[in-house]
Length: 329
Image (cartoon, rainbow, N blue to C red; front, side, top):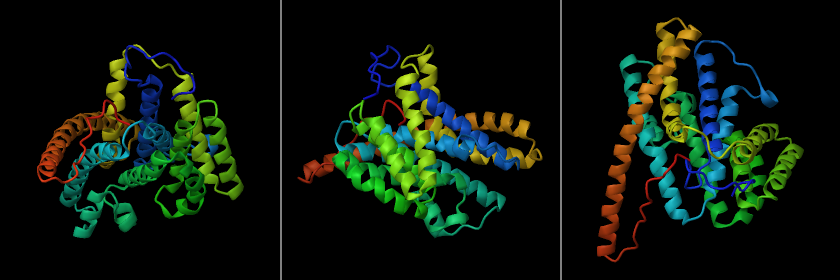
């Protein structure tokens, strides 16, 4: 439920909002800027609350994810749909990056690292040895979705989870980005008039505890959702275009880092060339990855359906297969 109860639009008939799509596109642009600057050895500026563009972009992503995580429906079906959204594209991108790493001889790789990376836990188990350092985001979002499970089951669990974030975030890669996710959960779980007030209360408590990074990214999350659900329009011309771009931001995130790094290594870190060619190559790779992800996702759904049929035939509790999501959330 959004703060401003605008009527549903013709471009977003299922309640999807153009503001959320625009913010996703903005977020991936900020993350891309950060990585372009990094591979070209050009430190990006510190913006809002001393956060760099990449940190702001990730905060926007996870705030939206937290807001959309608190949705109607069975929690088992929800988490399965999220895993089917996260893993297929991630597995494909990881295999491609590992293969490129093998051909280039960039980093030594062990079987335990490969297994951990495919599980999405590589940054926890192998730290700096991770091949494709930007994959740390997948670990973060998996942790966030795990946090969302008890919140979906009982919104009052936020009263325990928010204080626990203070103690836990230093031990989680990018753990300070849990704050905007929790802000999204708070806003969606509460009544429209109460959500922002409760979010500000959480930020105040984090500030009192000295968890400055939680406050900084949490503020970004709050501003993001105030804009995305109230200030920005729910409908825009060319709605199909914004949905198309928004739905592919996750795939772009997975593939753009190696593309920028490769262009930078060939063109002596020229920031203009890296930004131009790297973005073009990333866009082409994103389309391919998105299509491959759909094929793999459909295959996995078919497999789960077959398992469900077998379970039913053998009087075993069935596995629920979620419908393919209408949007990337």
